[in-house]
Amino acid sequence: MQLRSELMQYVRKVEPYVPGEQPQTRVIKLNTNENPYPPAPQVAEALRDLDVEGLRLYPDPAAADLTEALAGYYGVGKDQVFVGVGSDDVLSMCFLTFFNSDKPILFPDITYSFYKVWAELYRIPYECPHLDAEFRLVKEDYHKENGGIIFPNPNAPTAIYEELDFVEDIVAHNRDVVVIVDEAYVDFAGPSAVALTKKYDNLLVVQTFSKSRSMAGMRIGFCIGHPALIRCLNDVKFSFNSYTMNQAALVCGVEAVKADGYFREAVRKIVDTREWAKKELARLGFSFTDSRTNFLFARHPEKDAGELFEMLKREQIYVRYFGGGRTSRYLRITVGTREEMEALFAALERLVQKV
Image (tube, rainbow, N blue to C red; front, side, top):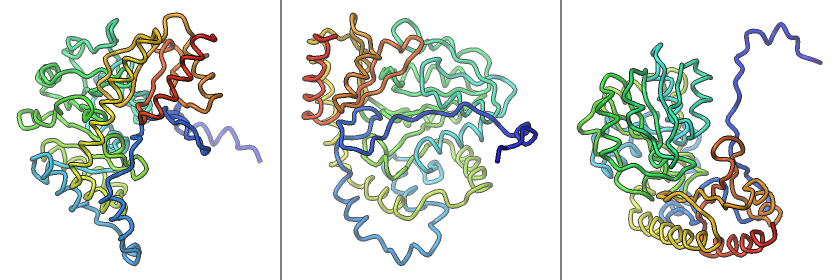
């Protein structure tokens, strides 16, 4: 039966965000910036010891244990932490809660495509200041009147990290609106803007367990900010779903926060592999941004990025390609294990000579 057109006139229509491919076969998967190393052993132990009988009960709507663990780790009050189902959920909640002005919000023209999707879904006006020729934010573009600001640091897919004085300049010039700094990759980069939340009540910092803590499949995200902003987020959350975090995520999240030594060692290994990979890319004639993330944003001066993407895919090596605009000449390559990266570069060496 065909749906009648009359029913569609009041249905909200959006162009959805398209996530990276999740192949179900065994491949070298360097396309969605997952951590190549498993979660901490303490997480695995917590999952094995999970009280299955307790699953008949609803989880703690306040996520108190995880909130307390994060507050202790980052040196903030429990009332300054909000947790959600991955940073995507937290960010979407932030859009819904804090971007309610007739003035346009601001975010970069090259960044996560879901910012634009959420703005259109929630009918929030927006403008996208252009990154400069080196793919860097221009802070003066964020000094004008607006309804709120969001930008990632490091940015994606460009992999570029801005120092805290740069971030503070934008926050300080926008004291009457909420500024959200999306720090999914900050553990591979440099100091977090969490320190600035002690000074600025208009700053929210969002992070995730998906990258540096190897828990993309568990879906845990959080943000840190002024207690009044966190209360507003909770008010919105409780208005449509009181139980966003499941019991397994809450238990495993606490153990991941406790496993600080394992976390730091995994980050170190990825950073070491990243810096080695930059040298390999240069050897093969690629140019790239100065990545401060767990991925590389690279192009070859003579080879078509889309063709390389398809050729690698045929060899069961998945990277990410963004067609169109200034990113169309680039591949985004997740930093895998040393062995995975060696296989990638062996394939690239053949393909670069072949194309």
